[in-house]
Image (cartoon, rainbow over all chains, first blue to last red; front, side, top):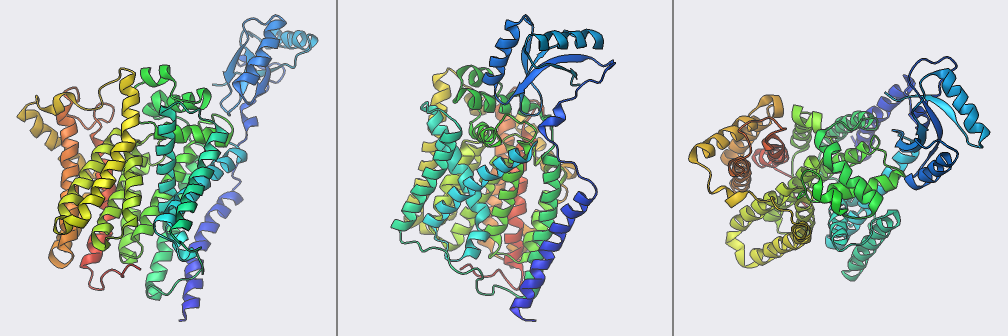
Length: 122
Length: 457
């Protein structure tokens, strides 16, 4: 066996399993998570505990700036929390039911804010 | 958890590898690209150590930590190493394929070893990228310290003086903070991959350093055995400092062992950087480094005139790197790194209990599988058929490390005599000893193997 042939066989011994394993895993439908996975919007009639969310920002200063705008329209108990996916969300957690939450969403939007209801993280 | 976060981490670690490889190029020279590839793991660990040591000193003097500052450090360190290399007349690597270094069979064994270790690392990557922050010490103080550096740009006095383990050195929080900048956020899920990179780099460093000195079957079987023992298998990606300090120390000790054989001066530069990194990663790092250098002083007695001044210089660099952090926490009225009275007031009864505990932990197969037993066989083989000087050096180092662990239990009266990791650090401490055993086994077996090790270039 020539040195070049031996090198080719050695390269195959390394490459085949190292490429085959992730290929098999990928073919099995591996999921690649993203920051969106931390957003769990509530459907109408949702009975799980809910948060009123005003937005997400990449940094605490940007989230605090949004918090200031939210508090300025009357949500004094709103606060900034890490969302578990590397971002910072501004929320109000005093929602007791979906109908009350939907009403709050409408109020917030009327005041020029973006807002929606999310299921509280576990 | 995003591709962008993973790409950022990969870029950061590539930067660390470039720093360390340029350090290696300046110190040793890298004539071929195959040398660069073979020693890239060592280069990566050196980059981690150099980066960590530099930033520890910068944080102590109050230089603000940030993404651009991290980038500037990597560029500046690479530039300085490159300038030193040019000044020393190092040539640019040439040629992808080196001269044949063994039979086809040994080439296939090496390829199989790389494939098996690679598969293990691929599997660990899958679990690391989605791991949550569960380890107590990690969420209790390692990560909060990293967040303090990330958000406040330095050694925030409140966090660093009131968190648990206030004397613990800051390299791991520095690396974590750099990882947060590289990922673009405090993503405490994806940042587990930083520890995957440390592991992969450490494994590559060990394999690359041993490759030309031991038979491939001995190298890869030992490496695989050590990587899959229960204690390492479950703790390799834990975001704490234990794995990093073990890797820095063991690769440094391996370089010391090889230096005793071949006397190549570039190894001492690597040892100084690695041990300085270990001393600033965990408190044990200083003890490990002192023991390894102490044994080497003894082993180099026959050529002490030339060897001792060099070893003293290495020891001086390690101490000089370790001092500023110690000054910082002492200036903030923090004490407790060393045991009270160095344990002199404890009883003989406690000393015997401490020794018995260390022995029980070392030979606990549920922690380390058969590694300690294989080590004893390898030592016996080397003493009978192989390099007795090598076997003597490794035995002395392992015995001193073992006694060091017993001394830790003995000298802190508050530590109960138990292997419970929440109460006594002896299991973590013994990890370095077992990893060193795993790295030593191929050298010991190789020296007894009739074909003998291949000569280093």
